Length: 277
Ligand code: SAM
Image 1 (cartoon, rainbow, N blue to C red):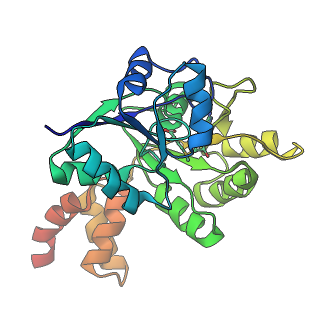
Image 2 (image 1 turned 180 degrees about the vertical axis):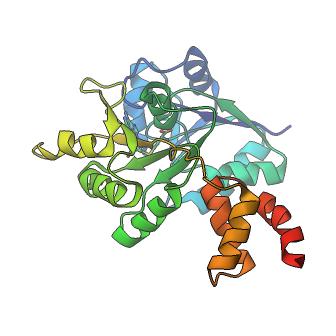
């Protein structure tokens, strides 16, 4: 019988945010694969857990996954943890989890903290749906391109950003989404200097720019683009653009879908009878 891989969430700052189940499982498994073993040893010591640790990080993921799979196939239960929060969420783990699926090894979630969910839960932004972008790219152009893709999104978007890039990113959001775009910034969640900002991106810039350096970890949440009621129906706009522009049907469908915030396929269907005329 194969063992199971337990994917265990650990705190994102406050050591008390460990579940009873996480503590029990980390104590029971044969081995814990951890992103940084020295970092995780402190958490384990705090909870009196003596289980052996082995490193599993971005730079040894592939090779280590092979070794862990052999042990799992031999019946050992293994836990996977990262430095903070939930493994695989902007953290290592994907390779091992995917290999376990391929090999028919059980993968069990032991849920707990994650900065994306903690940020969303207090941001005061719509949460029926949301889009998680992970870390924003460090390079300016790549970041701006990603933010451009966010500007018409109809769900709240959540991104991880390094504190020293916060001001530059907020300036990009002003340029791309407008100064009145609503954002939330959740900094140092669950820690002593926890801070939540909620307001327009312009106000966020004002709040954070007069600081002597921004420290700690943070999550940026971007409100959905406001819905504007288009003046024309989809059919009217399709005909209008066809008559008044040089755009081809593909480009017209794309623009109408964007303006009406509906799926391109829906607009495409509506455009078919018009094309024949
Ligand atoms: N696996 C983690 C999770 O489930 O949230 C995320 C790990 S990722 C390497 C680290 C990033 O998560 C940080 O740079 C920051 O954007 C965000 N983060 C982690 N802890 C945080 C906290 N206490 N407050 C705000 N953001 C945090």
